[in-house]
Length: 478
View (cartoon, helix red, strand yellow):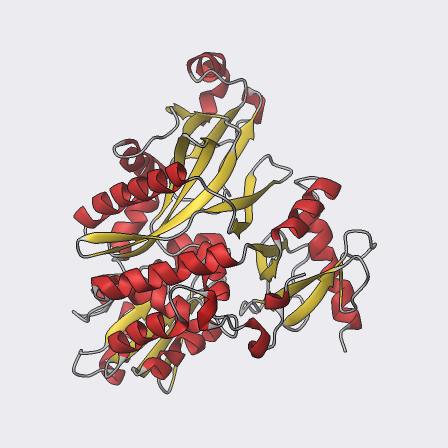
């Protein structure tokens, strides 16, 4: 039973006695950073920028906000202290990697004019959820890295070279996907694996251009690809935050992965709070700091994520670098501040600019929260089957999940159900085309609940079952 997943703040809020680092410690540090500052916030949606605007509650003055949302065509409009931009990138995955920054760069005139209007002295601090092009900021200070750097690092071949230089990785080959029939047999011998993982060497995210192949015929029609052996183990992610002279390392988590009908591994969320040996924790911390040090040398600041496979307690192999905040941050935010993600999310986005002692306080608070309460976060998405507006979603709140019922999710509790916290992430796209990915929301619950679903329905079928059951909730929700 997850009492902490109640949507009622009085139940969810941890008491000071439950943690070695109190809520007041990291909040005081965030307040000290924000107080008296003029701020401009930039987010993925109007809802997100509105949430980040509550930085004013930490003592800052938000003078303007910019929302950059995925869409099918570029546009921009100003409404008072808000600038709304749409990108020509409808996929949230592509939008996160490149569309967000490209839309800001393509709307440079509108962005510069807006910033000069709300911040004529150019003294405001820009807090952005994702990397931004420094060229549009006109010298303003920001807590985010320059997207010119991060888009370079998003390239899988570039990221692989960086990881190869400082942490243990998988042996890889670079090949022309169109000649797979020529190199396949030799590659399986060189990599000592009958199954190979083939990944586009360019920009991609969320596993959208990664394929698990058992034969040359399954290799997709791409250009240059990275080829690695298929390795079994615990697939994990970890987040670091780079600041001047140091890297704050946050707790590692198990990834929830499914494989779609094209043999692509798909990210479906993460599980925090699982056991790690002292040796593993120390090794992961050293490895994340090694990557953070190299990123800092290139001018990177702020949060980044690493994916790795834990082959054993003594062996890890790093497989991907994400030079931006990652989904794991949503779990940390939920654990630290269940009433709203804003204060801890804002803290993680700005902590690189805090003092060293304050950074450590936030890190200890997150570590303590993760240890106290294991938590599964499922990132629910769906693929549009027809052209039309976004699907209607159930309201936020506590639902009940019962693997023994035809409809997994319900508003009513049963003897064998478990409580889950549903947080819809309403899309601001006006319409989706067939095949486009729509983000539905986050589902938080006890980890055994997800493991039970995977065991019953299989690693590739439990997510569609869960997504389909949202329809029944919508029909029955009062």
